[in-house]
Length: 564
Image (cartoon, rainbow, N blue to C red; front, side, top):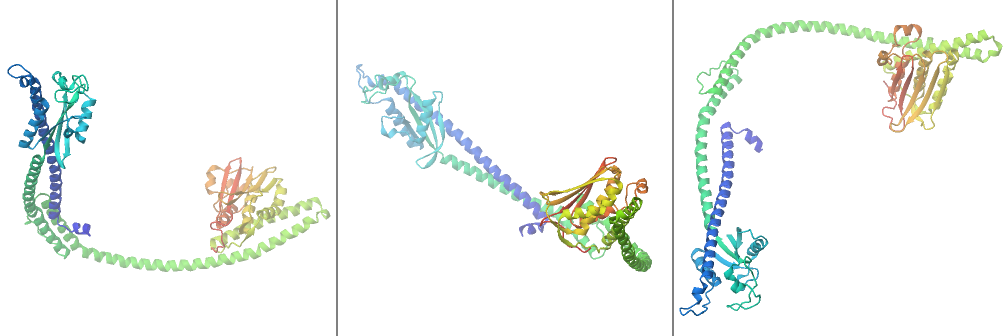
């Protein structure tokens, strides 16, 4: 909903929102930058003040150390300790200074003589740094003290020669104040001066500067928004409104638009000029439209007459096609009955004569075999033509049943045996033991193998060899039927067309080897009806290998009873 509302927002409002957004981001970044800069500047100022104060306190301490003899010896030259030593003076001056400024000045060590001088966490961190590295001369940061944020500064105090009287050797001996000496030596860390500075004043200054900056930028933003609003209204919004009115006139059908008086400049002026030119061209087109519509109406009427004539011609062509289809069906029925039936009888009589070969001469026996083999070839050609015609007519059905491919191969061998004996070809077949029983059309599978073997016999010379191998591909769940010969082979340029109907290599091959050219095409159609495939690998003069894949098992793809 928010996206839709923003799409409906006027360009003037969008521009102002974008501008204000940019200024708001800039203001935020500027405030952050000012805050960081002011904090860094305040920290530098507090560091400088703390550093100067630490040097002043160190000077007081050193002054007391130098003037101890003047303080503790009276006018008679006798030593009279007045208990005014450097530590007491430094701490006292620090307290007096703190009352007037709000600062806190402390002197502390790891094991101070006074329990009030025990270091806190920050001071302990500073002592560890000064103790680990003699070159570290200061340690400071903003840290919490008594529940408030403060600037804390520390500087090391090193043992000097005058300090050894109270803090040097022998270790453990009581000094003039009654404290055991520490056994320190010159340069050892005697402690630190710790200065705590409140940062409330600096924080207030930072906040004041940020507020002033925000107020200034906000006022500037307001003035710029008003200026932009006026400029957008004058230079953009008003001309666009006039242009919108002109577009509304065009939408209502009035194409005569005059935009000479539009209050626009630059790109909007160019847009208005182009729009006026466009409307003029549209008016000219509209004026010619009726004439063109009339001409097109006449053309359409003539075209309708032509279409009606073509429709009548198509109806006549369809009628003739139906008649031709009926003639084709009648012809197939005649061929099926008048040709296949006599051929079947001829083959049966030839087999009877062949079985009685002892009673006839060898010459007559050869004639009987010739009759039988040629009749089988002719019957196969007729069957191929009829099956291909059924497939093209959509009447080929697969009668599915469990099939053992051993039976299919044996049936093919019994049919082609006369052809093999006639040409003197060596034939062998092998079905692997792992080939399962598949579900398919027995007659169609027999025709596939028979056509492939018959094709191999046709193009294999006398004394050649043909092998039929049936294997099972477990990964693809397919039964593979391979028919290989060492015949004349197939030219490379003929391989893409070898499974087309009525294709048999070139014309010279067709003249030398008779045939209808339907055997391989029919084998391909029958294999695909089973959901399978067929491929060929061949080289001219090297023989050919035809491979057929038929689905096996439960997932047979398209293997089902089909009516095409």
